[in-house]
Length: 494
Image 1: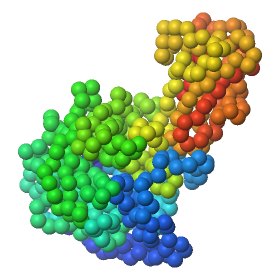
Image 2: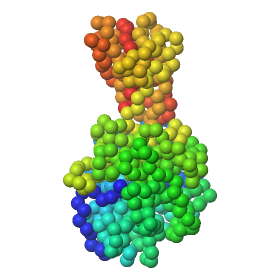
Image 3: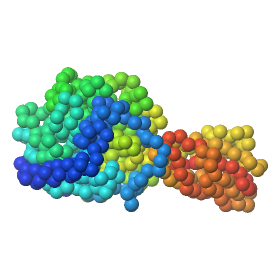
Image 4: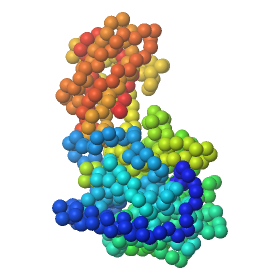
C-alpha cells in the first residue's frame, strides 16, 4: 500500500508555515531567474496540457511518442535506473516539471507531512528541501499517515497548483482523500476545509489519488478503495478546477486471482491510442510488491491486464526489492517512470522506500522500462534459412537455434529499447564441439562487436555479454557466424 515507511512517529497536528513559506520565496526567485534565462516551450510555468501526465507544458500539443527521437540521452554522472535518486524515505513519489527544474513529492516521513525535493533534470541530482510542503492538515485529519500525494500544475480551469493527498480521519481508522492548493510548486499547500473530497466509508475509505485530464479538459481522479478484502481502483469525474466531485465514482479495476493480495496506486496515461492504467499489486512492505498495467479503449474500461508484471523484484534480479507506486512523467525528451523501492526493512510493515527514476518507452500501448532486462527467444528470430530451431527441453523457450555451420550464416533478432543509449546484450548459448566459436553482433546493419563462445561441456549452458548502442524503439540485432559452431537459446537486453 502507499503507506509511510521507516519511522512511523506521528507528526505534530499543525505544522509551521514559516518553513514552507521560505521555500516558496526561494522557489519563486529560482523560477524568475529561469524565465529570465529563456522560457520553456508552452510558457514559463510549464502548465499541464489536457490528456497528458503531470509536467507536460501547455500548448505543446499531444504527448510526444516515448521515447522521443533517437539521440543518445545525457544523464548526470553516477545515474543508473537501478539506483535510487533519493536514498532516504521518499515513498509513493510523484514528479512535476516547472520552469527551471522538477519537483518531487512523497508520503510523510519523520520530518514532514509531505516532503518535497527538487532537481534540474528527472534523473537528478535530487535534493530534499527543508521544511514541509503541506502547511497543515484539514480539521478532519490527524497527523502521521499522510500518504501518496498527487500535485497537478495550473491548467485549464485552475490557476493554482492542486494537491490531492490521503490522510487518516480523526477518531477513526479510515483514510480519506483531501485537496489543497498553492501558488508555488514548493507550497505551502493550504488544505480546503470541510468534508474530505473522497471518503467512501462503506469501502473502508480511500487512498492513492491520481489525476488524469482528457484532451477536452475534463478532469478525473483515480483512487483505491482501502478495504483490504475489496480493494479496487475507482474513477470519478471532477469539476473544471479539480476541487470538487462532478459525478459518481465507478469501479474500473479489481484484483485478479493470480495477483498478490490487492491492487492500488493507479496512474493513467494515454499512449498508442489506448488508455494505459499502471497500478501496483501486493503489500508495499514485501518483496513481491510489483508494478503492473492494463489497457482499455475507453477511460471507464473494460481494462485488459497484461499477463506479467512491468516491474518486480525478480525482474530486477533483486537489485530493487518491491518496485511500485509508479508515476509517469512526460518530458520533451520522452517519458520517465517515477517509483519507489525498498531500501531497508525494520520489522513488520516498517520499511524505508527510496525514489527511483527510469526512462520509459512505448511500443504502442505496451510500456517498457529502462533497467528491467527483457528476454528475446532466439527461435523467434528471422532465421534467414541458415539455421534450424530444434527442440531442446532445457532451453528457455523449449527451442534453440543453430548450429551456425557455414560462413555468412546470419539471424536477425528484433529488440525494443525503451530509450536510446548503451545496452548490454547477453546471449545464452551451448557449444559442445570442444572448440571456441565466434559470432559477429551488429545493430541495425552496422557491425558492433563480436561474441566469443568458449566450448561448453556436458551439454551445459553459458552466457556471454556484449555492449551495443541502440536507438529508441525497435532495433534489429543480428548474429553472423565468424568461426566454429554453437546453439543460441536467447538474447537478453539489459
